[in-house]
Amino acid sequence: MSWYKLHKKAHSMIGYRVMTVDDAGNLKDGLPLDKGAIHNKPEGLYLSLDSSYVIDYYSHGSDDVDDPQEVLGKYQFDSDELMQGNLSDKYTEFTVPRAKLIDFTYLHPRKEIESSEPSSGLQYGREQDGA
Image (cartoon, rainbow, N blue to C red; front, side):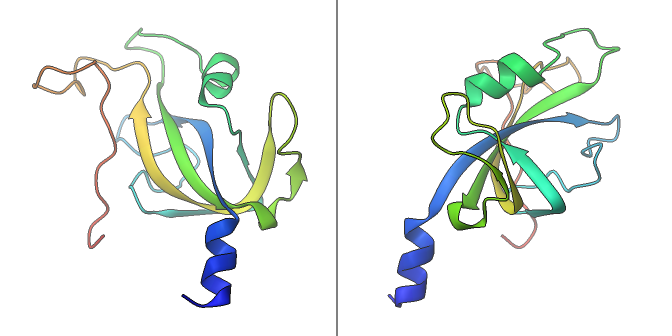
């Protein structure tokens, strides 16, 4: 493995973000809701290292079908690209210009998106075409 790939692998980290999904199943900010998609935001994509923190502070926590659906995105990002924030804070909040969506979970499943198979009530991300 080249030094560049070793460097990138050593600086790869996992971060989390709560996102709102529209009625058509797309993210409200226009980013694709597909595993493997690279999400780019020049002004910064807000993430945290703690999934519980982002759920507690950024999720509306509603099962009401009239409220927007939310997903918890799990991202892979390069710690060398940190724009704002600090990875060593107790409650990490930081921005990166891009990150790869590696998985997502519906937070408050509605009847129309629940799986027909017995599960924990959460539905996980769909594979991106060609991935």
